[in-house]
Structures are given as structure tokens and as C-alpha cells.
Length: 286
Ligand SMILES: [Zn+2]
Image 1: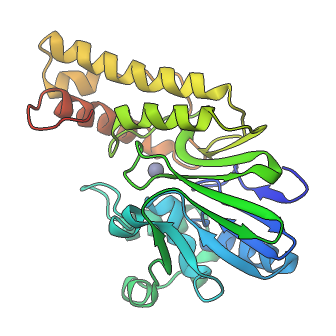
Image 2: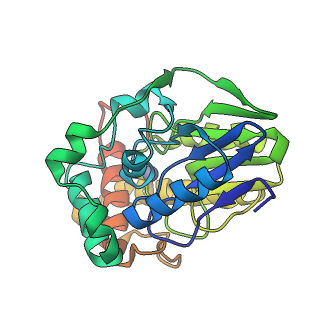
């Protein structure tokens, strides 16, 4: 992407990236599929020693591959990422979710894929956690870890001013469907404003192609459309089932690479989670 930044946007999972500095390499999110995780580690190590592995959120498509890096560098992420580690949502087991993707989309990776017991027994959690914005210096590069909650509570953007780039994680889904089911949309809109204030040329999203700050307007509209569509359904007295069946403002957008089979699942959970929040008197965030 730039001379020092590589990102992988075209395979199943998030957009794992590496940044080369004068004193080694920083990995930001790790590949979900084992073949790609091992390949990325080799690529990183061919560039220099890996200094940190950073995660932008706790969903398994950003963090499952930590397993393949954990013996080489400290894992750094927000305390709430550590607290919610790999939790997807109640109906999806993270290990089974990844195992299915390996079986169907990374057959050579099966030989590198640990059994459930081994995975969780060997998996190392964070070496370093933080609870507010922090800045790490590696060689001549600055890595500002900005807490940007909304998509998930521990959501983090990594801003590297020397490369004029921000890695937003799933605060931005570029040109593909947005997952809202574990979200607080009010916080998410605030976090988009925080990212909009950065001085960058490149926005590396959690999913979809690299974009720029102009895409923030599109992401903001997507969130507002989802909330207003479900709010209108609730105001019209629609049931949860009716809302799930009829409301999908993201229907025209593709799903991210490798997730075609989950198209209905995404819109169902988006509509259902917003309906639950908008009909509850107990929840304050939406
Ligand atoms: Zn996510």
C-alpha cells in the first residue's frame, strides 16, 4: 500500500496488515485462515523481527490467528478486547466458525489447524493491555492506539502518522455489509468523528478495500439507515419476525470475501439486535 505498509483485503477474514519500521515489524490483526497466518508471519519475519502484534477488536476474524504469532512478539490490545476475547454472538461458536472456514476455504490449512483443546490450551492472551488511548514508538514509527468503541466495546484504531494511515478495524466496512449485532451505534458514530479528525491519506478498514476519509460519510449513513429503518418498523408496530423479514437497508451491498453463505445471517442479526434494543426500556445505548 505504501512502501512500509502491506495489507491483505481479498481473503476470508479481516484485513490483516504489517508495518515495517527501522526497528522491526508491527502486525495489526492476524489472518483467520492458517495458511495465510503462516505466510504472513514468514513475510513479516523476512522484513525484520516482529515487535508487536496488535488487535483492533475481539471478533475471531481479527484475533484467531494470534495463535500463529504468539511465540514471537507481545500481543497488545485494549482491556475490553481481552475481556471479550473471541466472543462472537450467542449462536456462533468462534472455534467452530473458524473451523468451518478452514474446511471450506483453506484445505491446506487443515494440517496447521489445532484441535479445539490444543488451541485453547496453548493460546496466549494479551501481554499488554490498555484502557485509554496509548502511543507506542517502534523505530521511527509511532503507533497511536485509539479507543473507538461502537462496533465492539474494545474497538481500537491504529493510527500511524508517519505513513499517513489509520487501521480502523470494523469501525469501517468498506463497500460491504456492516455487522451491527454486538454494537452501540451511538458510540460508533462518535468514533467515526474521532477518526475523521485524523490527518491521513489511507483508511484501512476492517473489511473491504482500502479507502480514505471520505468513506466515513458512507459508513455513517449506513449506521443511521439501519437504526432509522428498524426504528420506523418498531414505531409501526412490526413484530421482531416481521422486522427481520422486511428490513434490510444494506441489501444492495455485497458481503465481504468468503462470507456469501452468511448473507441472511448478517441482516437477520442486524435487524434483530436493533429491534431488541429499540423495544427495550432497560438498554440505554442503541
Ligand atoms: Zn467485527
